[in-house]
Length: 291
Image 1: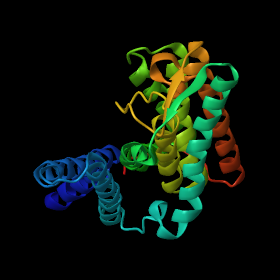
Image 2: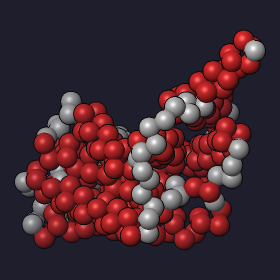
Image 3: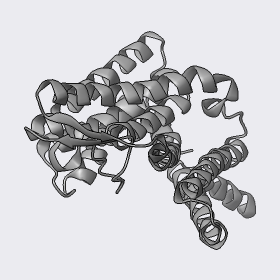
Image 4: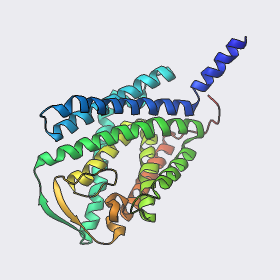
């Protein structure tokens, strides 16, 4: 009897949402760390170009982060992982990728109209490989962890609205002390990562949409338009550009993604996602229970 009670308590602890979060994050981070070790041990000793090495590594990391997530939560939850369904890949990946690129194009266009964007030169197409690889890893790994693990489990526990509020506050707080941060840049980041991307998951109920929005976004900013991306040190892309002018439009030290136009457009798109999700009855009510 006593042993049965202990086992029940252990099972509850193992299935508590915070325990699941920690386990999920640990698995994905460990897989990425292993991939980086293998890169150092194997790829870095070859004569392959840096771009090819980066592309092989990023594709591997994208695949194993998805595989690790599916295997872990299929075993944990005893369910099919519908949020990474192969049948929904194309219908969400392509619109997601194009949305990320379109948003960055709009930011750049606004800067251009204001006279703050000019093209110094157009580089060889091969310069797209490294930005593509960086964006692929960032989109997959970041959203598998932040949306697939943290937001999904938090939303199930607290409900959609509370989870979104927590995410907006979380990303704002995490970026307050970033070098060059302003009220606008912090607000823009909170709207992008704290509202728009989780809302993309809520409206689609799959991870492909937020993954590929992030992928397209991070690829376009430095890779296509030569803008600053604060999460990378990339200096080369298809276009070598000169971005200058009012930091409200350019994003200042942290790039176009932290501009005023980014803040408003991401807030608008996130809100539209949520309105559509509400209409489709895809918002989750809080459970407030210990699992």
